[in-house]
Image (cartoon, rainbow, N blue to C red; front, side, top):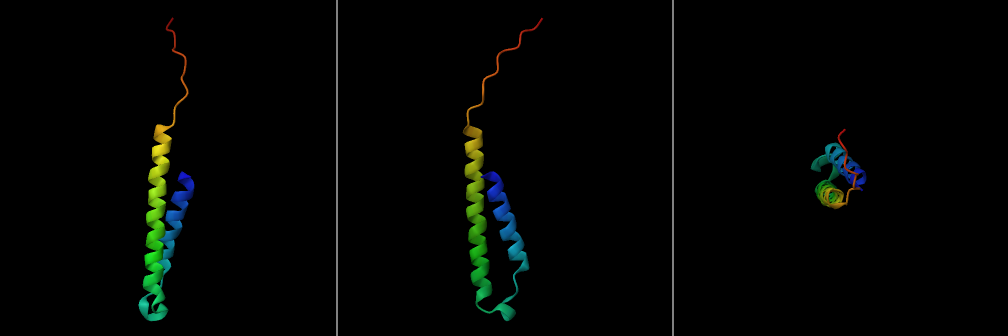
Length: 68
């Protein structure tokens, strides 16, 4: 899930960089910009949730090492 959220955020960022201005796109420019920013925000929330799941996952116990 972490990889999916990072790729989604990266693609939304690239799409924002490739957006045309208002004079060539018209009313769709601010609508697309707002939509892509929402996608970025959702990807950030997914990234944070994935990090919390990874931090909270139980780790396997290793047997103690004996010094000789």
